[in-house]
Every structure is written in C-alpha cells, then in structure tokens.
Amino acid sequence: MPGDQLQVLNALDVAKTQWYHFTAIVIAGMGFFTDAYDLFCISLVTKLLGRIYYHVEGSKVPGTLPPNVAAAVNGVAFCGTLTGQLFFGWLGDKLGRKKVYGMTLMIMILCSVASGLSFGHKPKSVMATLCFFRFWLGFGIGGDYPLSATIMSEYANKKTRGAFIAAVFAMQGFGIMAGGIFAIIISAVFEAKFPAPTYAEDALRSTIPQADFVWRIILMFGALPAAMTFYSRSRMPETARYTALVAKDAKQAASDMARVLQVEIEAEQGIVEYISNDKSKSYSLFSKEFMKRHGLHLLGTTSTWFLLDIAFYSSNLFQKDIFSAIGWIPPAQTMSAIQEVFKIARAQTLIALCSTMPGYWFTVAFIDVIGRFAIQLMGFFFMTVFMFALAIPYDHWTHKENRIGFVVMYSLTFFFANFGPNVTTFVVPAEIFPARFRSTCHGISAASGKLGAIVGAFGFLYLAQSPDKNKTSAGYPPGIGVRNSLIMLGVVSFLGILFTLLVPEAKGKSLEEISGENGDNHENTNNGNRTVPIV
Image (tube, rainbow, N blue to C red; front, side, top):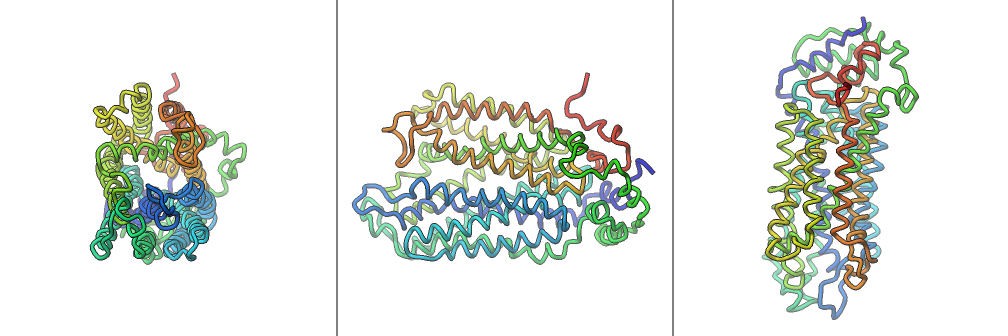
C-alpha cells in the first residue's frame, strides 16, 4: 500500500479547471479583497483624522496625528493580524478549515462597522476606541491568510494550483483599488454638497463638520464585500484533504468531492487507516521528526516572508516624496480637508493600478510555468538591485530634474516585489507542509511576515529620519537618513535571496508528494524536494 494515493485526492489533483475552481477563487479571494480594503483604507483617512481631532489654532499647516497616535492607528491592525494568523492558523488544523472560515469573516464584518462607529468627542476617546476595534478587525483578517491559502491549495489541481492560490492573493490589488475608488466617490459627493475653502484661506472652515462622517463611511464600507460572501463560505464543503487525512473520514471526503466534481469516487477507508496508523507519520508539530523533515522549510518560509515585508512595507516612507514630485498631492494648506482625501485616494488608486496590479497578475500567469522558486529568487534579486540603485546615488535622485527617474526605479522595485516574493511567500507555505500542520505552518509564516511589516512600516519610519535633529519630522528623534535606510533595505532583500534557497519547489507536484503523506517511506518523499541540486 505504500505509494498509494486516495482516489478522492487524485481526482482533485488531475481535475480539469472547471467552474468550482473559479467559485473557490472568488469566495476565498473576496476575503482578501476585504482584507486589503480594511488594512489600507486607514491610510486614506489618517490626514483627515489629524485635521478633525488635532487642529492647532493659529497653525500655518493643518493638524496631523502625533507620531505615537499615528503609529497606533496605522499599526494596531497589523498587531491584530499577526495574532489572528497564529490563532486561526492553529484552529484551522484543529477544527477544520470550513468551521473557522466563517468565524473570521464574522469578526471582520462586525469590526469594520464598529470601527466606523468609534465613539466620543475628545480625540483620546475616539482614537482609543478606533484602535480597539481595528485590533480585532486585524485579528479576523489574520485568520483569512492561512485559511484562504490552505483551502485554495487543497481544492486546486496540481497543474494550476500555484496560479489559483496566487489569484486569491492578487485580489488584494482589487481591494486596494476599491478603497481608493470608494474614497474618491465619497469625497467628491461631500465636496459637491458641502464646498469648503482651502486651509490657507480659512483654517477653521476648511474642515467641515460633516467631514467626521467621511472617514466613518469609508471604514464601514469594508463590511459590505465580506457580508456578501458569508453565505457562500457557509455553503462550501470541508476540503477533502482535511476530512480524509486529518479527520480520517474517507467516506465523507469522497461524498463531498463527488458532489463538487460531479464524478463517482470510491471511499477508501482502508488507505486512510493505513496512513493514520503509520508511526513514521504520527509526529507532532515541532517534534524532532518534524524539524528533521520540515524544519528548514519552515525556516525558509518564515524568514523570506519576514524579510520581504520589511522591504515591502517600508515603501510608505517614499510615497509622499513620489506623490509630491509628480504633482499628485499638492501642499496640505492649499486644500480643504475633503479635497485632501480625494487627492490621496486618487494617488493610491493610480499606484495600485500602475504598479501593484501588474506584478500580482504576472505572477498568476507565470507561477506554474517557471515555478515559485525562480520567481521568488528573481524578485528578491531585482529588489536588491533597485534598492542599491536608489541608495548609492541618492543625492542624484533628490534633484528635481531626476525625480522621474526615482519614480521609475521605485515602481520597478515594487513591481518585482509583487512579481516575486510578495505572492510566492503566500503560496508556498500552503503547499509544502502535511495537511494536519498546513494551516498552522502557514499562519506561523504569515505572522513572521506581519512582524516584518511592523518593522518595515514603523521601525524604518524612525530610522529614515534625518541625522540632523533640526530636519526631522515633528515629534520624531534623529535617525540614519533615507540613503542609509535604503542601503539597509537592499541588504534585507539580498538576505531574502539567501533564505530562498531553503524553500522547496512545489510546481507540478501533489500536496501529498511534497509533504510525504502519500504512503511512501520518508527517504523517498524528500527526493525532488530540494530547491538546489546536490552535486
């Protein structure tokens, strides 16, 4: 019986691409659409929150969130996401993917609405309640990472599995765009209904009282796409791989997939019992045997996601320079509060359309052609090249006539992040671990990435401050400067190349072949799992 694969799992592996694949992509992808909307929409309204709640009478510039408040408002969802990735990843392996999938969506719906209803009139109370609900929103979002990736990988066929998982992740791009477009519409409606002078013309009247509704509506809208997919998620059957390999119910797995695939499938309880009684495959998570088989793989997935997100989320350091350089966002005092929301939303939408989206869909197109390993290695390589190309002649790029070159280099850096490790670090952990650990290990890898996001978004925000204390942003201590920060990000990207060598290639293989669950002896299951050939 060694080497046998359950008929239900083989049927999934060799199934032609059909309607249920696209249904699964949409159901799982709408979760990521909502995740991206909820995580990124806060950046559209932070300037507005500063104007409403931190206006300084007589100041020549509009009010802004103090550094500690800005860090809390922007970062608390990341902390919640990290926690949710660990918790729901573990729970998905204990209770099943389907049961936990509905929980995460319900949390996201409730907390999206609650974020917009943050109560109080004083700045401290509004920011405190907003941060509270944003944390729990992030907690729900965190659960969507391991569950969406695992469900899609376990439903997909082995020929196009990478593209299907990548397509789920690529829905983030549509979520970011939707956030920008919705903010453009809302701000345009309020600007038409309640016109206001610029801050320079009349500081007090430039922020209309109705502006308090704008940020609340934008935040609450994130509940709508999540609510639209709740019924569909509740109707999805549990994945056959969880039912058969973890719950040990071959009959239910065969019944569920026969209905999905519309073919007759034999329930092979004998093979399930044989696999479950195999002592060589009964090791626990983080046991000596697990570390021997999958320890380097887990180190590879956690380290590369951590390093990628440091570089990726540090991008917000340079966006304001780019937006100003190409005239997308004029000085704040030349706009009213609502006009500023409109201009920021327009800029974010254009960045998503021109830079973010193409990279995602290039990966979807090529991941099952050239493989995960090659795309990730290529992405980290070009990120390293462009980071150093920005950093070494940084003074050259600061001259006004060279700003367009800086924009091009910056865009290429993040094109290759998306046509590279930003997608593959999400895909690979859903493929290379055994079914009973798959969701947990993906959650651990994703949480490592989110820790990198916190370092990138906030650590480098402080590091990139000028060494001259007279040139730092208000409220920030001196740092090492933008040039040295870019050099550090280049080093981070280079380390990503090295740690990618620990990540196995999963292209064209069944999940059981990669993880060693198909009944073979351990010595045979690792053949072909190496990323670099041993000479």
